[in-house]
Image (cartoon, rainbow, N blue to C red; front, top):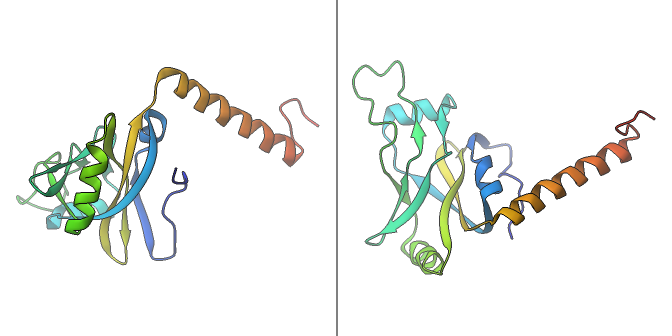
Length: 163
């Protein structure tokens, strides 16, 4: 399973993350894809005005698309703002698309966007091949996160009850 950490580095600027995806899904693998955007969408992304909450990706006729991602209209663009929730083509190599398609065709797997970011000035999206978690898996995730926080507090020397 890939690490929960987001993509990092001096030439990277993270715009939006899909924190809910880490809660709702077990991420098995991840891919980096470019996004075909229009000018006002790029400007809006640079302002950090994007939302990945209800978004997903799919492969249709040998092409990958991002569906349901919301990129807010750019205020200074007079009339060229596209629909904020339009389908956006993902830019991947043919072999990558075929590999993703094979993985997603397995029972219970889906393709979810994990984050939007800029890498060397180009807009990218990190996609995760994911399996939906059941309710008890979600409770286990919460329990593990709380235990980690308690351990961090204890190792810092400042537990919950002073000390």
